[in-house]
Length: 370
Image 1 (cartoon, rainbow, N blue to C red):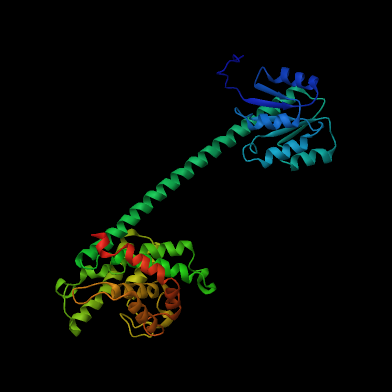
Image 2 (cartoon, one colour):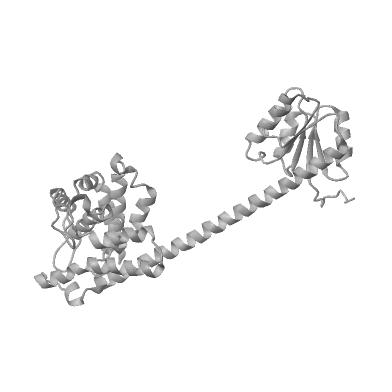
């Protein structure tokens, strides 16, 4: 028999009974095999079960004063700290309805008195083994969940870095855009969050979709990588032929993302959104935009959001060929464009969150990022 010193690693069993003779009997039966703690009341049993070291099994009498065994079991199962401790009722109550109630309260077994020592030992051993297996599986599941969360976070970080690297590549081709990518990313998020307050969009623009829009937005001008410097960096007004070349950035951007997706070999939600934004953010509500001349809700919602964000930022930003406009003037242009350039509902969302737009513009102002 293993020594019962401080290093005793045997399972700890709590026996609860208000009769000293019963406690003595169970203690003598169990101590050769397990560590044993005794409680003469339900209240004391609850205290021991919540303390450290915690018992791995409770043998519980039902008929006790003040707090009976049923109530003790109920409280054990209601407490997250003790609900996984298996409870075996050990009682003189032998009616079927008593046993049924015990199992309904969460007990794993029900033994009637007078006991058969070999049966009690066998059932205690069985339920301790089952608990050990359950604890192992629970620990393994917790470990695996942590690993999944860790790997997911790593993939997410790699994804975010890749997006920003691609977006920054386009930005370096036009070094006067400064924080344009960052500002439009937050503008889109602000618009989507405001639009989600309306019942028509609440289901579509949930937190997951808004996150996808936020991540996709930086890729809206990725196609500018393919535009010649002579056109992209020209300080004067573009000729019709040059403007036609500039318009190709939407198709170039969409195609670049399509090729990346094909190399990946699977569809990724944020890339689908990025394709829509890159290809269609220059479309106009009245059908006068490019590259397809889409109109109204035929234009993907993601692209309609980006259209307003992109134009607003272009209006307030300084370029070699123009000065930046004050917010009030840019606001007037956006509002006047409702139903022509922009989706009217998105313009309403803009006016509802224009203070946030101004805060974003200041936070990511070009001078602040130098």
